[in-house]
Length: 95
Image 1 (cartoon, rainbow, N blue to C red):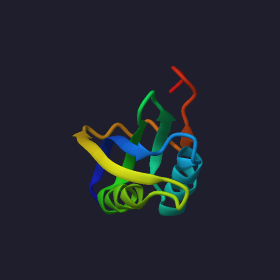
Image 2 (cartoon, rainbow, N blue to C red; image 1 turned 90 degrees about the vertical axis):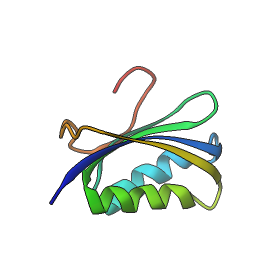
Image 3 (cartoon, rainbow, N blue to C red; image 1 turned 180 degrees about the horizontal axis):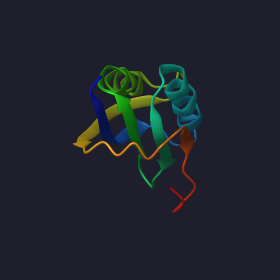
Image 4 (tube, rainbow, N blue to C red; image 1 turned 60 degrees about the vertical axis):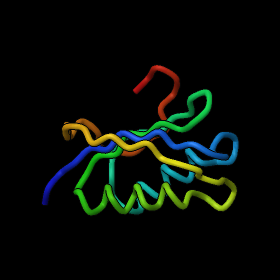
């Protein structure tokens, strides 16, 4: 299985609607690793794992939780590192 890493910036009604908590639950269900955090005007996420699972997670992020609304996602593919063993909410500069 090919392992990949995606770096996402998710825009829309994604702050204050439980998007990070929803993302953690979905990531653990799908079986990908990394983190998610709020920025000033969007949500940022790093997602690592098997390519098919990462792509499934990105698709899920396009849909988002029922309490939010995703307008667009900026995605960058990066080199897989394997540094994450769970999917968590990042707190400020702690990643």
